[in-house]
Image (cartoon, rainbow, N blue to C red; front, side):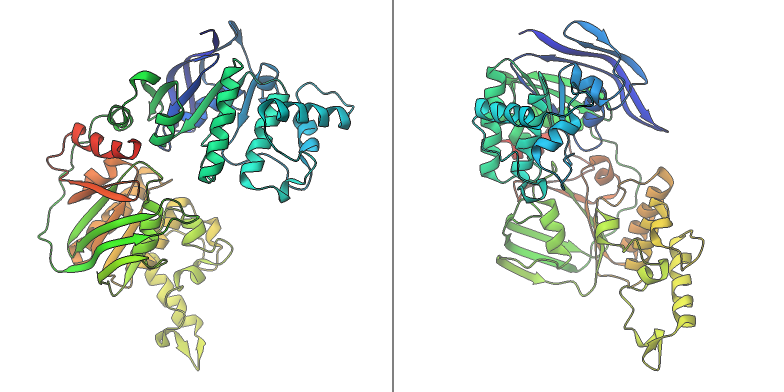
Length: 487
């Protein structure tokens, strides 16, 4: 197949964070090339460099055999690179034709609305797509918006179409439509780069796969040689060495589930026949490729959803919840530090006088929370949005742990934290375990789990497919279990 684009030695950092390092990638005409890796592997950053959205710190870009310097997204579009990002870039207040005109790389100061409409409609007809290009974006479904972005990219001359997590918000019927569109495009000789962390999609769609891990290209596979376990092994690499964390003897169960099922929802993959026991003085890790039921499991364990089947044999008295999205699910960013700190205690009589919250008592309580969690803030009345990510997470942890919970659900608790803040959260989790809490740690990073978990359950397609002892597990064993989601 003809070589359409080539990246050599690409590096890109954001401050002290090296997002991509020494990455090579070839993109050929007429193929769907999957770029696979966990969140933070560098996939999107590398493709933003190819599209001209980001400039590389080092390395070279070739398009159609010519070394190019891309100075922005329009430069990339002129060179035939189209990028449909995970969070759509359409302006909701206008229609599809107007969005096309605003982003067209070859239009000058004049606008020709009717010609733009014909171009979009012709492209839609060629791909057998039904999209109303005159409809306001706000009235389109998620699938229609995605198809419109694909139309716009192709109508502006894209020969390489980059799709970033394209099925993240699509239903099964829309995924089938997308697959048909991609097959038509490659049949026309166009190239598709498919960024994903979902193994089933790779197995279904890809002609070739490149795996990235921690900013580097670590493996490549041809479509006829794809194996879910091999792909997963490449994604996770060698298992981290377990740190020297003391192990305690587990006590009585604080949570027990038997045969629990939860229907799929907007949160993602449902759960099927879940058996889970969590005891005092233990950390249970949950590992799995993202999108295999972790989100719904977290909602179940913290009481946001109830089982559709099965039984909760033992319910914890108090649950502490450290959600993956602290700003969306744990904090009210526009409210003060104090308001966020007392969210569980605002009806507590010990903080009230004459039926009203007493400022002096609230202040004393909040000061205790901040001291226990080492939270740094200009004032307890500061907006919580003014705190650093680390201090926001320390506030969430201190607030949740203040209640001495029976069960702690920590869903990717180190997300977005620097080493110091992540270390503080880790120590608080271990201290709570030592006091007698049971801890469930859900993380996409095996290093987090092997660090402190006493045992690790692997989830795939909404089911637990195995359990490993982090002190004895092999990379092959874990890779095989994680690969269950791709079979």
